[in-house]
Length: 306
Image (cartoon, rainbow, N blue to C red):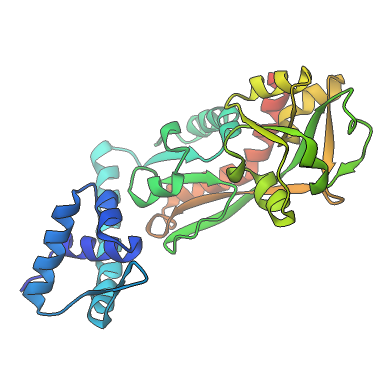
């Protein structure tokens, strides 16, 4: 038989996702279509490519051999598709970008606009709809670059460190923490914490509260930074935000920014791309610009919005 690209994509997706159902979602196909394709391939080869173990489909020795081939062939196909798309559009680079954090969208557009002025041969597109799952966007070819503060677990994602910022506890000026130099995880137990997203997705939870086994008394989600700041200023609750984001309010005295832990809570930002795009001159150029000017753009945005 002659192996086709679609066969390799099915084997790769089933191995990566561990199930036919999730592989179908990844491939934008129906579950019966993927099951039929996999069974047809196994019948034609006369071997089983996967075995079930602990509710997960794992590749057999024969399946692993096809996976090695898929890794080589599909990466080259993706490179070719990427290059052809650049040729078709007449651009040296077309880059689709998203970030996992709401606050990045306050400074990212201005930085990209300046980048576009310096490099007009690069077409940049922001995809805010991919914020909830930027890694899924990368793996499904909807994104070219994701700006993240958590390292992805996917094996074929290359990450480059961009910059660090500090997260601080933001409280009203009459709060009991207002005159403190720092707070600990236990201090959050009796507080109403207001976040941009679900608590489990936040830096304060992942790095401080969860390891200490601490949960705030109450949590509220407010997607808009301005709404969070107003709620904190009004005494509704407290929040944890980047220091640059609330620098104007802290300087004006309307809010206080309190260090979390003795050394402070630092957050590292990364640029994540698929391995096969990491060598692209356009991608490398953009990552250098993000690393060089990203933090400054964020701080400038904080000053302008205050």
